[in-house]
Image 1: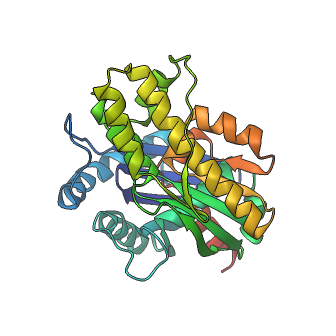
Image 2 (image 1 turned 90 degrees about the vertical axis):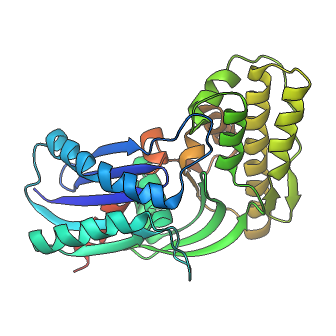
Image 3 (image 1 turned 90 degrees about the horizontal axis):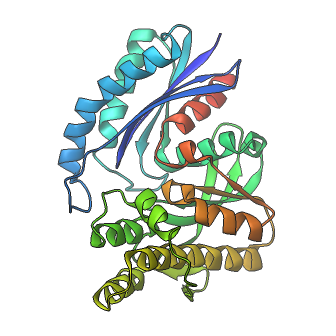
Length: 314
């Protein structure tokens, strides 16, 4: 048996995963960072404290779930948001430090990746497209902190990534979470907003604001507030918000395909776990592949998959 441990301490999830490379199974353990009612996030110093408290619990639950930590051959950990100069968030230091200690104790190699690389790898794994670890494709990373489209070349171990489009202001997950808080829903609000939207039968139209391949989302929050002030139903506002984000992602996809040509498209990140968006985008683009919902939100599975690819090259 060959097992690879993955660790990720991002906003807003503490997670660990164990990848059994022989069976192809991934065990996951996660805990959301608690956010006080009415608040729109967690400060980084609080996130570090919460991850420090939660990571031992998450790793302990994973150990019970997978029947122990025997035969761990390598550890993968996310240490930064992206592979870009100056990309840094303090919350990743919790996972990075724990991974380094475990690597020393177990005497196994430690592989460090960006959080974004982990999202891409988790999406490839769960969509059955690990072949693209040695291929070219487009990847969307759509979450609370990132709304980016990337041109990706896999080299068998990790990815060479070029940014080709993004939101120029508010990120997709921010727009969704702020609309959810506006409607009195818990944070993070994606799943709660989706449930409300599914109760609305009224048609919603939204023309995305595009600048080349980039989109602008700051107006979505303002329009949701205007709808609320005008007395529109919460169900309609939820559907409007999700439609606005979805149409913006579709606008980015259309622009990218027109400019760069056809390639497989991978959609990753917590926003892309939304069932409404997945159905519409899948029907529109035959080359689209999505991470399974449990692999869409922040997770350590991608770090474990990438570490497994790294150990195979040693």
